[in-house]
Amino acid sequence: MSPQLFPLINITQNNEVSSSHRDLTPEFKEKYFKQILDHFNFISLGNGTFDQRYLITDQYWKKGYGPIFFYTGNEGDIWDFALNSGFITELAEVQRALVIFAEHRYYGKSLPFGKDSFNIPQVGQLTVEQALADYAVMITQLKEELGAQSCPVIVFGGSYGGMLSVYMRIRYPNIVTGALAASAPILSTAGLGESKQFFQDVTADFEKVSPACRDAVKGAFQKLNTLAQQKDYRRIQSAFSLCKTPSTSKDIKQLNGLLRNAFTMMAMLDYPYRTQFMSSLPAYPVKVACETMLNGTDLMSALRDTVGILYNSTGKLACFDLYTLYVECADPTGCGLGFNSYAWDYQACTEIEMCYESNNVTDMFPPMTFTEQQREQYCSKRWGVVSRPGWLKTQYWGNDLSTASNIIFSNGDLDPWANGGIRKSLSSSLIAINIPEGAHHLDLRGSNPADPESVIAARKMESEIIAQWVKTARKQSS
Image (tube, rainbow, N blue to C red; front, top):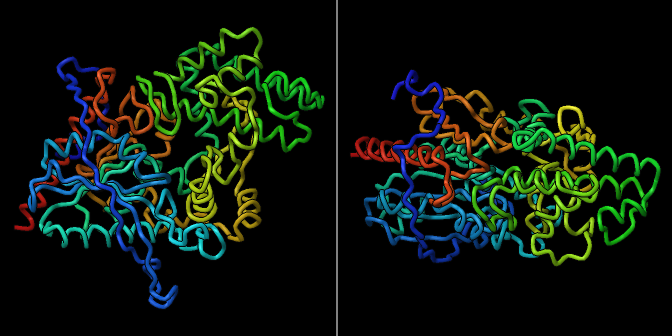
């Protein structure tokens, strides 16, 4: 393929491409790998190790010959990603591949120091560099143990996991033949681009369904702001069915964050069928949200019911608890809950830059700043760390990727993270695939009868490119 053939791949409707849907349930075995605690200091921590979890299935593998498909686990329990990335196992069946999903250190059950993992200084071993080294060591050792030394390795990842796949190909090209990076915002998380872009893109998703939906959401937030300025806290509690009456500007900020987060999640996970990934959501949640927003009796109760699509999917919550449903952190798009949220908060305070802001002008959300100075103050207080702006760009090249190779950057137009990633092909082997009807890494999900034609075509193209990489790698090693 030449650069002329791939200045940009824009997947559009193609009636010749059809979906074949089968329920593939891979027989994953859960295992643990004895991993090095600190790859970069031979004295620290007494050369200690920890148990890193991974999932493996060889049910499709042509032993010793088929490629290895390795998922670079991201900010959560590895089972969540394995059970929501069916394309990888579907592709493994076709290409006779071994499949491994590796859990990221400090997430799920891969806690290097157990319950003390998020104490200071133990949390200091949580870095992108350490995670990549974990994967490099794991791949190398498992290849030896499984008699797979000559098997090419393709890494896959979605979102932050997609970023890690890019970084693996850049950092360890001796180990990794190619990378599929789905919805990987490698530019915006490296401090490149506009701080207002993210929430502007979330807004655009709802605006596409109906400009009236955007206006209603915007108006609801303005109404909330007016009540907050009047300190009419009881009315706010009543309108939003809050468990406790807010009493401070901090509570209002928390409420605004919780409300905004619901729209972010629905935009990201705007899949064409019901899902349980990250949250229980209906098919096309953005469309459902707009219908709810526009059918309400008044703007604020409509806003409450709309965010309830995310927070109260069962309908069993009697009230919304501001501080348990949402945790404010160094990532304005949300850190999740539990131990995983601590880990991501720490990463957002150190290497991952996400100074995204909303302003109620270019987006429909309340004005909520998050400047580099605010990030620095928060992170110093929370973790005792000083952020290093520009570090990801220095380490992993930012937008200076022209000397890299064998990376697919896939992005869906419905995904608010898309414009923080690579949208145009950079060479014949740095290929951008844009999916008009795709939400957050939809292409990594398994085939579904409701899949839009654009994602079916994207997966077909990804499959062909990966097969070519594997074929070329075999020729070069023979």
